[in-house]
Length: 252
Ligand SMILES: Nc1ncnc2c1ncn2[C@@H]1O[C@H](COP(=O)(O)OP(=O)(O)OP(=O)(O)O)[C@@H](O)[C@H]1O
Image (cartoon, rainbow, N blue to C red):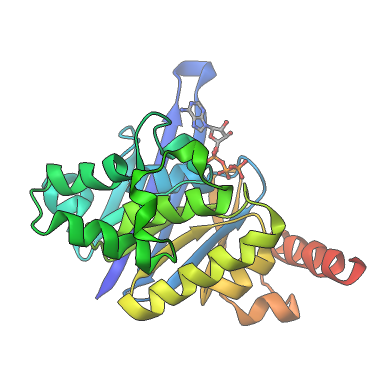
C-alpha cells in the first residue's frame, strides 16, 4: 500500500484578477517505507505541499490519502499517530518557555498514552540525547540538539510517516551530516516513510530513493535518485537544475 497518495492537489489564492495559482494539479505517490524528495526553486510550492498534508492549510482541492484514507476524513488522534512534521527551524517549533519535558509530554498527555516518563526518556535516547535533557530549556541546547528534540517530539506518538521540511538547512554544516545520519538510522529501524523537502540535491541524493522536481507550483518530473548522478532528466527544467547542482559540486 502507498503511504501517501497526492492527486490533483491545487491551490488558488485571491479572487478575480488577483487570483494566484500556488499549486496546480500536483500528483505523486510515496510507497510505504520509501523516502521521497521534493526539490525545486524557492517559491515552487514544496513547503505548501507539506503544509497541506500536515493539515496546516485547508484551502486546497484534490485528494490527499495517507495509507489509503483521505486526510480530511481521518479522526485527529488517528491522524497524529500516522503522520508528523519536522520543521526547518527548531527554535520556531519548540516553545522557548517550555522545558523539553513539557514539549515531549504534551502529545503524550493529549493522546492519553501510558508509561509517559519511560516514553520520554526512550525518545531522547533514540535521538542520541541524555534523558537528563528533560529538565533543560530550548535556549540551553545547541541547534543540533534542538533539532534532535524536535525529531524526538515528532516521533513520540510513533507515527509511520514523517514530513521533513528542510530539517537540516538551519544547522551548522558540521552537524547537518549527524542529523541526516540520525534520520536515516531512524527510518531504517522503524521502517518510516519520509517526504523530504530540500533545496540541496546532495542531501536528497543521500536521503531519498526517488524525488519530484517542482517548478512554479507544478510537478514537472518524478525520477529515481540515479538520475541525479547522470543528469539525464526528461524535463528541461529538471535537467537544468541537476546540471547546475553537478557543476556546483565539481567547482567546490
Ligand atoms: N499563506 C500564503 N499566502 C500567500 N501566498 C503564499 C502562502 N503560502 C505560500 N504562498 C506562496 O506560495 C508559493 C509557494 O511557497 P512555498 O513556501 O511552498 O515554496 P517553497 O518551494 O517551499 O520555497 P522555499 O524553498 O523558499 O521554502 C510562493 O510564491 C509563496 O509566496
